[in-house]
Image 1 (cartoon, rainbow, N blue to C red):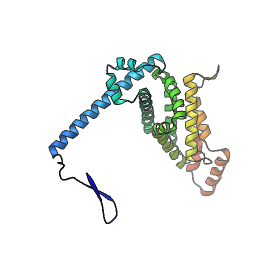
Image 2 (spheres, one colour; image 1 turned 180 degrees about the horizontal axis):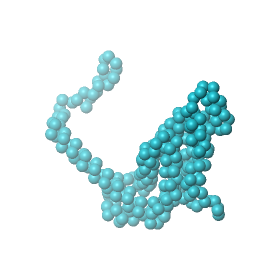
Image 3 (cartoon, helix red, strand yellow; image 1 turned 60 degrees about the vertical axis):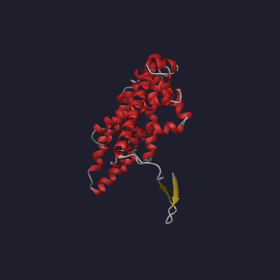
Image 4 (cartoon, one colour; image 1 turned 120 degrees about the vertical axis):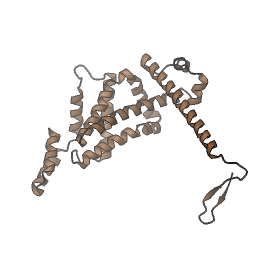
Length: 261
């Protein structure tokens, strides 16, 4: 296939070789149907590999399984495995991405069901913490360890996988900021980073049982801690009250009262 320059703007225009016969409509539909079928089979097989890998992780509590063990568990061939994954590292990355995506989407459903900015933020935090608390049942320890190593060794892949989660939290905090429900001395980006880091650290404490004797914290206590960290300072509250008295607006005090509970 050749290409030639457009004399007006210098762009390359694709020129079809007249000797190459283009498929007719029915031929194109046949090609599309075959490609669609092949894509569906590929997704189904890759999903079987991921499901088998997760089972092995849950049963052993580690990711030290062999590819042969994966083949035996999935009832697929070694050839099929290498048609879908370059190796075990790529499989583990896909498994981690799959688990993370499900984690974020389940939290998103709870956030969407909540009414009001602060209620959505509470739903996000509680959703994160409750899933972290029960994550040992789905290979949580292994995924948490992998999470740490991926962040250090492959930061670009780590950031890409967690991008939807980060966008969701940023959206929730932005809504709270616009409603005047959280502190203004830090930017939305800074608050998102701090809250996400706090939730991640709390999750790791729960997964690895790092708290000392008598240090167990309930979900209510953890949410109260996060909410307190996001609340406006006493000085900011005082300014809000003074501004309210000056302007006569009643909405700001009600929001402050609701937040301090």
